[in-house]
Every structure is written in structure tokens, then in C-alpha cells.
Amino acid sequence: MRFINFLLKKSEHLVNKCFLFTLFLLIIGISNTSFGQSKLSAGVNYIAAFGEKTIDFQNTEYFINTSHGYEITLNNSYHFRNTKIQGVFEIGFRQLNFSGSSDNLIYSGQVIKLIGALGANYSFNDKWDVATYVEVENNLGLDEFNSGTGDLFRISLSLETKYFLTDHLGISLLMSRAMTPITNGYIILNPQYQTRLGLIYKFL
Image (cartoon, rainbow, N blue to C red):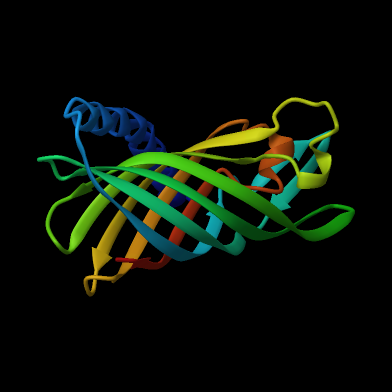
């Protein structure tokens, strides 16, 4: 348990710096006013979402299991001239299966998310990239958007490492931390931290 708490603290510290790193890369790139050719890619990821194991909500203690799911993304990157930096815009679809229990209840279900992300990618060489993103997803269910309540969207910060096996195909590992809203009622269904492992395909 101490090791898990240590990893959570380290990941929180790391992801908090991702936002500043993203801004830094974008400012450097935008300062060079000409853009290179845009490139389109697609990704498929397996997701493991986790966080606190127990949560108190409405005077009830809930025991939270790790959520699992997948996402499909479409990414468009713009290469800044004379740099190794690319601005990245991403849209996608995500599904998570959650479960848990309390003293009087065992529950499970599924959440569907539409996602958008804006970030920066840095290419070390032809094989290795690192990227940071600010991600936005629907926090409430799509059928609840007319409820008039706040907290419609969740904002997360992410750090991704990519290794390309060929000119087109690569693998990626991403760590994400939700920044807001992260109240207990939302964390029960959608844990604060995510690890994603998947494949990337770059189109010509």
C-alpha cells in the first residue's frame, strides 16, 4: 500500500509538470510562425483506471475496483518549421467498465466518453517521441447533459511516450491524471488516474 501511495504521489507530481511542459513546447513552436505538413494518425489503447481504493460518499464507504476499458483516437499533428516539436489535436471515443461494492451493494457498469485533447509532441529521433496533453471529456453521461448541473466536463493532464517499430506503426504508453472535477461522486465511476497502452498508426 505504501508503494502504491508513493507511485500516486510521484505520478501526480509528474503530471502537474506536463501542463507547463506542454505550454513551453507550444510557445517555442508557435514562435516559429511557419508550419510544416500536417500528419494524421490513429490509435487504439487499452485503459486501466485506478485511484483510491475506498471512498466515502453520502455516509457510505465504497470499495473501488480498478476500471478497465479501451479508447480509439484520431490525431492530427502540425510540425513546426526547424524544430522537433509538433502541435497535436486529438479526438476520440473511450469506454470504461467500472465495479465496486459497499456494505449493502455490489455494483458494476459502463461509462462512455467523448474526448478531445490539445498538446505538444517532441521527437527525439525517428523512433522515440514524448508528448503532453490537456484532455477534455464529458464528465456526465451523454444523456445527462440537459440536467442543468455543472461539472459537465472533466479536464486531465497526460504524459505519453511513443516508440515506432516502423515508419507507420508504433506503441505508446500514457499516464493521465484528472485535475477537475475530482469529487467522490465522480471518482467512484471514473477513477482519477489512468494508464493506457496501445498502438499508433501514422498515415502518409
